[in-house]
Image (cartoon, rainbow, N blue to C red):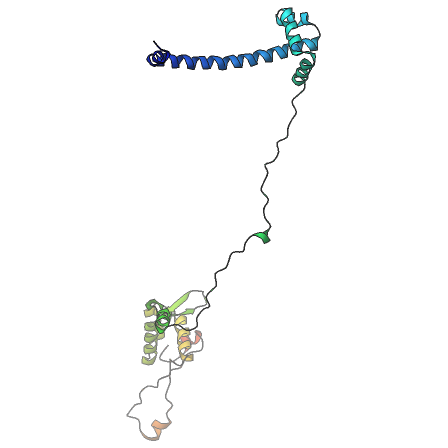
Length: 245
């Protein structure tokens, strides 16, 4: 049987043996390197101590093995190995990583700027009409708040248009001011102050009562007719003999 035919029939076993043989060869190379390193170290130990027997007794070896190692390596190589093993390793400071030089700002290419369009003064009438603000329905002018009167006691009396109408009608009709004040829930002094203000504004004009048709001639023309006068102070409101007090 030829070798080729034998290999083809037993290829699996042959390839398995080859892989194992490669592993042995690699291990043998590592072993040889380890043995050589051991021999150099032993020779450096013997050279440093100066006695093969002392090293053999200390390490539990045969004196002949120590002597063979020292002679194989040599005195000079053994001293070099001893110096390398005894000298402390040099502390190397970490060097900062090299950074690429940054080009100066002038060397950088300038980026082109986009032209800004000039604002046009003319606008289409549709655009101008669309941009005109429209009046908002809720922006109506606020209604005028009711007037308030500040009394001497510090309380504020809110005078409404209806209260002013009652006061004007009562004054023109000749009603009693105290009765009107009680009806409005106010004091006579507050009512008088409001009457003075209305008189100052020209809204409370004195009204003369109707003449008696039974009077005639000179007697009627020269008779002094009483006019309602607004008192100047609240005290005169109770001391006056006018029919309105």
